[in-house]
Amino acid sequence: MPWRNNSARYGHISILLHWGVALAVYGMFALGLWMVSLGYYDVWYHRAPDLHKGIGCLLFAVLLFRILWRFISPPPRPLSHYSALTRTGATLAHLALYVLLLSILISGYLISTADGQPISVFGWFSVPAVLSGLKDQADIAGDVHFYLAWGVVILSALHALAALKHHFIDGDMTLKRMLGRRIG
Image 1 (cartoon, rainbow, N blue to C red):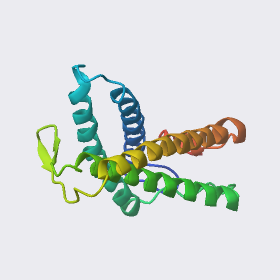
Image 2: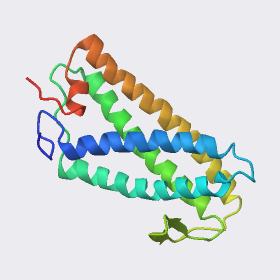
Image 3: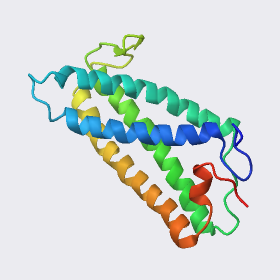
Image 4: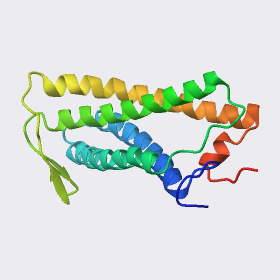
């Protein structure tokens, strides 16, 4: 399998980015739900948010690379039997996922830096607080973060269901292409 995408299938890098981001997003969602349930005296009360913030910063960098990669190595052509509605729906769903993911990461940054402190990414480097101290910044960004996280989980679940529909009902290669399988 090639490293770059070609007209018929995804390459290694796109596949790794797709599944890696999906795994990270669902892991972050689960971590977020778990950490808000922790009590103050729980050993993970401070560790879990630091982990969440560090992964979030790295995920932001990976997502920016993923967007850049789409320009460097465009995705395969849509399958010829896709209707105009399917093509448009897929394009809009992918665009919405990118916008939601970027918005979640930005809102998480605004929560984390509301007090003016940088975000330490596992002690490797710090991301400075460039916008902080706005009225109710952490609360508003927190609400936005929460609803966008649910939105991306719901939309990505629909995305997965659409891929399964293409695979099991339509019997086409949509899912197999993202699993690295050869077409024809």
